[in-house]
Image 1 (cartoon, helix red, strand yellow):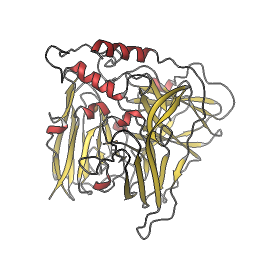
Image 2 (spheres, rainbow, N blue to C red):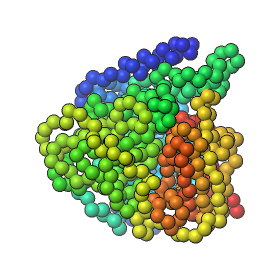
Image 3 (spheres, helix red, strand yellow):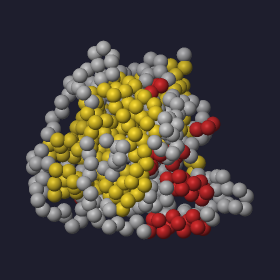
Image 4 (cartoon, helix red, strand yellow):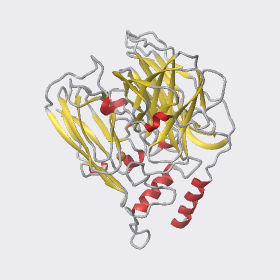
Length: 486
Ligand code: C2O
Ligand code: CU
């Protein structure tokens, strides 16, 4: 295919994304793990995951997706803190894969990063991950292999804390995603297009180092914050806005929302029509509750919030920052119709972010000055398409080092005009100084040109990925490691 044909194909794909409405019942079951504590260190439950190719129904349109089981998202894994799980993943995909348990500080060999912690699972083979569930909260899992995350391979991993039953009647998991697979170009075609357009691998005289944005792939607004990829669809719980997931409750119910951004290149602002949210957790850890009109959530981040359901029909909208379109789910506590304009007014308010949250009492890391401080400078360019940490792509990265038992500080600074959700494996960090006020998180959205200091306690030895959770940025090099040394 010539570049012109390729661009033409992209353009067609993204402009024929109009949707016929037609509904199919959503499947939202979860695998429930027995509540018997693993007192003897035995396996509490054996779970199976099939990574496979299947046909998904997106508002009446059948697309070939990759997923866990036969739904997008895959069925949630649900467990309690302290349970030992064995999760056998069989790879029925045509390529090798892996599973990373995002937000769970599992032992290093179970972290699911090929070439660093855990072997790849070859097609036709399986691998048994086994670990004791360490942290309560709203987490998730996905492959750590190329762009597979953007094909539908993701699912929630919800961990209950038996000591904290929670003061709510109902809970809804809301998994947000940006979708192109089977509707627009495949994620790999998108990535190849970004690289070709950026000219990084261009042969002289072939593609050149063009700076013109590709058709169907704007930089979003003024190239500020709109991601690198234009998506034809946004999903909540695997359903596009034309066929939204319907969440039922009784008026007055207190519902815990567990919001997960599984998107590859999209920051979302989430609001609920006619409701305030009371934000209670960030990346699984409790914060001092704050009321919010809307919440901004970067890729990989999670927020939990309580809503007290009013009487009627209300939209839950996930608006992509700097992009057009939206994800939609519907709350229904009475008969009636959706408002004509589903856009909640809360989306016009200043969104709540990690910057205004504080760790709940007892959640802060122990205080003390860090023994080690590292700078983590984020930068990159569209032309060539290259994203770096401390000036290097992953193949040239010099890992950051830490010694077991230390407090370490990372001074994150974003020297680019894109936002980057920075994710650390195997640990949570505290935003701001330890024992200070900020929330504990494993993924922090850093807006363009912003900086932040985060502290972590080095209590989980190994070699851990530190990377941007934009799948395209990570693929283009925006990854490094935090390695323990002796
Ligand atoms: Cu959610 Cu390294 O990833
Ligand atoms: Cu990034």
